[in-house]
Length: 247
Image 1 (spheres, rainbow, N blue to C red):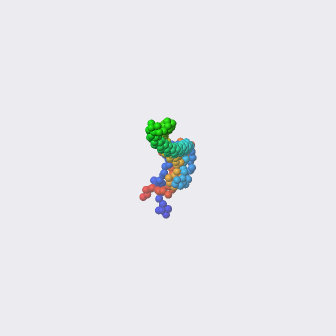
Image 2: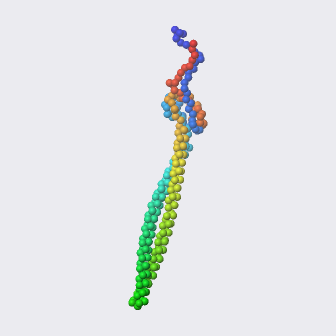
Image 3: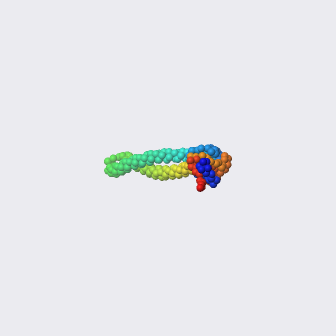
């Protein structure tokens, strides 16, 4: 009965799907978190490579990022303060020019009246209708007004030059703005470097791509490995089959 129900076959193979685990980067193994024959879950940590250098790089880059952010904030505040102060000074200077111009126009009108009054007084003095003191007094008034008009004219000119000087300082705000743009570019560059380092850091921890069992381990703690070198083998116990040829 046993002979009829059982077959002996020497040329048979037990096969399964094997998953070879290797690293994407070169490095030294710091820790093996599994053993041969151990059941593992998808996403479970298998191997950890030494990553102190990358963590230090990330910490240094984050410090540099904070410094750039602080420098940018300082420049933004400086630009706002400068523009606010410049705007106030421009308004003040325009008002000063406007006021000085009004005073100049007023003095100019008074000077025209004084000039007419001198002609009138000279005419009356020539007719001997008023004393000489009156003529001298009117002439003194005219000279004083003329002097005041010259002073106002000079003040208007100075105020206009100061306005031009203030307008020329607008370029300083543009320079600060360019510095802010440069810092923003550097800020993005550092962020990109941090992301690259974090990706590099993620490669230092190797996780299981499947649910299964650890078959064989080829590399151990302290060994230096290169990318692509097989570290261990996984298999799924539900994926076994036997291949044999039986008459």
